[in-house]
Structures are given as C-alpha cells and as structure tokens.
Image (cartoon, rainbow over all chains, first blue to last red; front, top):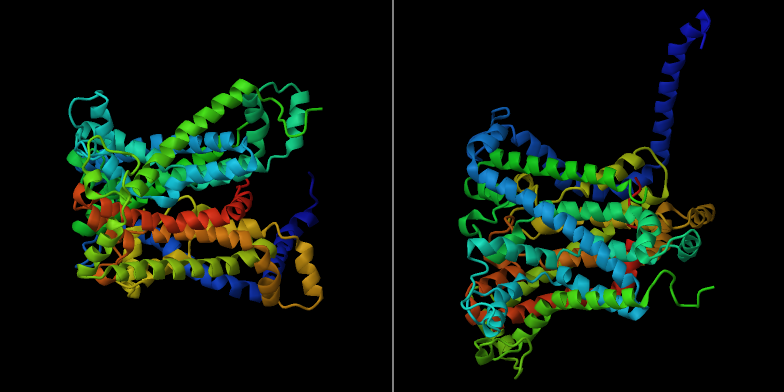
Length: 318
Length: 284
C-alpha cells in the first residue's frame, strides 16, 4: 500500500492514542465490574497461594542448594546436571515414571473411552448400574483388598486359586518378588484407572445428537466402528481433550498408589518413581533444592505431554 | 425408517459380544470390592481357609466389633480418626463448592478485563497436580504456620482447579437472558448469584461434592500433618493392615466403612454428575 507522507507521520501518534484510550477503557471496565473481582477474590487468593506460588517456588529452589537449616545457595543448573549424570536411582525413577505413564496413561484413557462407549449402548437403568460398577474402584480406592488378593501365602485369593486349580505349585510373592511387583502394580492401577475421564466420556456419548447417526447411515456409515470414528468421536472432541488432560496428569503422578501396595522402598526399587524420589529427597534427606528440581522436571513433563496430546486430538476424525 | 428404540448400524452378534465383554470386565472391577465386603464378615477360620472363598459362608459382625475394641484400646481412639476425616471432608468440600461457585459466576457469565486470562490459567492448572508440588507447598505452609493443622489439607482443597473448571463450564450454559432480565428488574449481582445462578447449578454442586469427598475421604497420611491426634481414617487403616493377614477381617471392615460413603453419594447423585460432566469438554 502506498502511504502519503502525511499519513506516515500520523500513524505512530494514532497508535499511542489508541493505546491510552484502550487503557482508559479497561480502567472503566474494571471499575464498572468491581463486584465481579470481589466474587473471585477468595478462590483466586487460594489458587495463587497453593497452585501458582508452588510452581514459582519449585522453579526458584530448583536452581539452589537448600537444606532448610542454612539459607539457599544459588548453584545454577547443578541439580539438573546431577540428576542425569550422578544419580543412578534418579534414572531408575525417571524410567519407571515414563514406563508407568506410557502404559497407564493411554491404557486408562482408551479403556475409559471404550467401556463408556459399550455402556452407552445399554438401556437407561443398566447403564447407570454399569457406570457405578466401573467407576466404583475409583470411588472406593481401597488397596487393602489387593494386598489380600496378592497375599504371598495360600490364604490370598490369587495364590489360593492358582494352587487349588494346579496352575502353580508354590506360592508366588506377588508384591515382594521383583519379577512380579511391576505387573501386579499395573493390574491394580488399571483396575482403578477409570476416573474422571470415564465420567466425562459417559456424559459426552450420551449427548451425541441422534439424528447425526441417521444422517451418517444414509451417507454410507456401515458399522458401529465407522460410526464411532466418523461421527461419535469428532462430536465429542471436547470431552476427549478433557479426558486426556485428566489421564495424563494422573499417569505422571503415580507414586502413592505404589507405596500403598508394595511399601516404600519397593524391593530393589523396581517400582521407584519420580514421586518417590522427590519425597525421599524432600522429606528424608532434606535436600529441598534437588527435590524441587525433580518437581520442576515432573511439572514440565506433564505440561509437555498435555500439549502434544492436545495437538494430536485435534486431528480426530479427520 | 428404523423401528423406534432400535439403533442403526448394530448387529446382534456385535451386541452379544460387547455385552459379554462388559460383564467379564465388570466382574474384574467388582470382584475386589465384593471380596472386601465378604472378608469383612468372615470369621477367623474362614480367613485362614484354603482355598479361600470369594463369598463368606457364615457371616459374622465380629470384625466390626473387634475393630471398635482394637481402636478403643489404641493410644488415639478410633472415633478421633473418624472425626478428623469427617471434619476435613465436610469443611473442605463445603468451602470448595462456595469458593468455586463465587469465582465461576463472574467468569462464566460476565465480560470484564482479565476474564479470559484467569479462565486460561485454571485450564492450565488442570495439567499438573498437587502431588508433584508438595515440597514447595510444604515450604509455603510452613511459612504460613499451617503445618500440623486441619487447614493444611482443607485450604488447598478450596482451591481445587478441577472443581472450579467444572463449575465454570456448567455455569456457562445458563442463558444470559435470565441474568439480563434480573438485572433490568434491579437485582444486585449478589442477588442474581444467590437466587438465580446458585439454584440452577445444583448438579454441579453435587459433582464437586463427589470429587472432593472422593479425594478428602480417602486421604491418608500426609507430610503436612504429623501429630497422631490429627491423622485420618485411611491412615489408621494402613496401620491395621500392616499387621498382615491376621488382621485381614478387621482391615476389610475398615475398608468397607471407608467405601460406603463415596459410593452411596455417587449412587444418589449419579444423574446430576453425568449432567455436569456433559459440559466438561475443552474447546481447542
């Protein structure tokens, strides 16, 4: 575009006045909506102190050496370097966390979606009942039962059954034997993996516009799988996004569930996760700087995976 | 035209297979809970029986009475753990519902500077959780003098991003015309909040309640609380369980007491929860 000299000169001045009038407008809007800010104040205060501030604190201390007794010392990237070069147990924890997240995240997510989809086919009353059955493990959250199922003597349900039917000849120490700990933990984690995302999917599926299915049938959708991919999933994309966030966040914070089952530390650290490692440094060894570096790393891993998955999910049904 | 009630694109074989599969996996989901309930009614000789029975043969209430005797003799009485969990759960849940509704109200229904930014921040907060940040949180709590008080658990529960997010999503579907009409009638923004918006979002309250109860009721030992007299019911449970299989009956009795509350609440409010979750979707 061609500008006359006059216009060129006028442009910056115009911009400035636009900015200041924008400011004035915002100020007016803030004053007009004063009551709105009062409504938000209590929640935002708590949110700031217990959600935003911990993130900032973790990042800050991750660059320090801090043992609580002496004031923190700034040490640059040392904590991060130490993790990957001088801490073998960290590498175990890092691998385990990624391993658990890679299994429980996708499997829990797909199970939630798949079973929600099957349950959605049922009549109203059976649907409510099945939703309860599948969600009950998340509600009850009792690992005690699993400790008895996996009990290492013949009074445990699993050993009792296997011995009695002749499948095994001696007791398996499900929660103590290094070759069985991880599989046992995974079974229990999968059992309780139908959480918030599952409820969101149940709701999303229920609300898909029925007439779309009829229209789809006319357009050549032949079976339930095609219907799922071309009609149902694109329609419930917002729920898929929300469910993914819930599943990923949960999958990366596996730790306490493992402790409840196999104790801490697990035999030979086979189920040692970053959460455990962080707790160890934060509460036993009082190396807060290092613990905060692990927290920051976990935080970044969660955010990063979430962003990637959100990108991938925006392609569903295309 | 397809017959009323019959769905298109469904084969009989497919339906049979999918229902069978649902029942099979449903059994896997239900068996541990059935086993827990059954164990809690088993007399000692049935617990030490080979092969173990899934279902109790001669049910007894012995485990429940033993539990009260056992806990009555302990240093901190059982009723104390029960009270702690009850207090934390009810205050935490109530506060969360109130604070989340108050904050969701402007965000969902009004336009003002900062609205979009705050909403975005809350969505971002869903992408990580408190477990990861407990060490910095501990430091902050220590500074605020909250360590070793109920508030170390209760106040952070008030700020749950999930509850806030669900409440805001649900409130967004309230028709703006309802708000406008009330405003023209001269209602204050507080009055609109209290007598128009709040009654409309009852399903969302119940949903926040179930998620909050599920979390707080099941909350065991935490770093934030060290004194025995402030510890919770799930913590007491882990203490009993650590005695091994000999206490299987009693520990399952506690497990049953623990699971009754969230499951009962879910059964009562299930349709409301599903209604709320229908709005839980994220726009990209």
